[in-house]
Length: 385
Image (tube, rainbow, N blue to C red):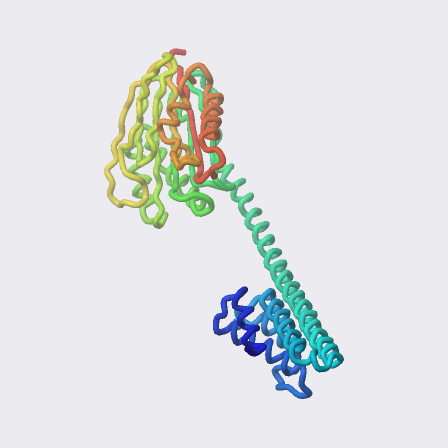
């Protein structure tokens, strides 16, 4: 067998010989042949150019390791042929030939290392430039997010605090700097309060961009403060066509402490619940959905419900980012998990109850990532005072 036959046989043991690779390996072989002659074609006159083309050309399906291995294996095959054919007759010629072949091969490998190092430097420089650009963009985005967060924080209202008959507690945790959950808690009159919680579909900046649109719409129709159905219906008419393919789930609750009533309209939102605070085993009352989501259907029928308030109750409203928390077993926290979190919490205040919910969520979730905005509002009433 010839040198090239044995050489390809050795290469096939460490590399899959596709047609492009066979051609590329053959160029290594041709380079070695031309390096031993006085003249050679132009394309083999510059060793650096040959190696550079192998390393960088898209047509060359060959790696640094494969080039190095092919050159080293070729050198061994040539030296073996010299040893077998020349050494027995002329030891001196064999030694001279061996030295020439080794020097040429070493030169090739040296240039291979140099060109590969240059390619790495070039790639690293390009990656550094790209990384610097990404860092600049990230800093710019972070700056914009911080500004957006400040603006959104101003948009979200503080909770009323001046009535001993009613106390509000809040946990608001957007997935990013800004979120798509909007809440509003207002004292309308001496004995009247309004609670509104909306969840804009999606999360992050895309949902946050629509938050102000929802806020303006809500504030515009708060004139219908004691008519939850009318307020939600007006909002749907107003938001239809303004929020694209997005939609809004929302719940609006009107509370009159003097009349001891609660009226609500639930537009596709997770059902809120009333949790009695006077008994060890409370019977929970739910504020179920009374209409479809807002902003995507032009004509929707909404309904409002009225409940009589007991002496001491805790109203719980929230967005779906809480019950739709998953653990490592792909199990969902769910409505039951939220209800369990409030078990035996009738003797603690709203802030402590929220901390208990957060602890339960954290234990359930483990290392799984948070996937949505979270908002939880508690309203503790004590109309016996």
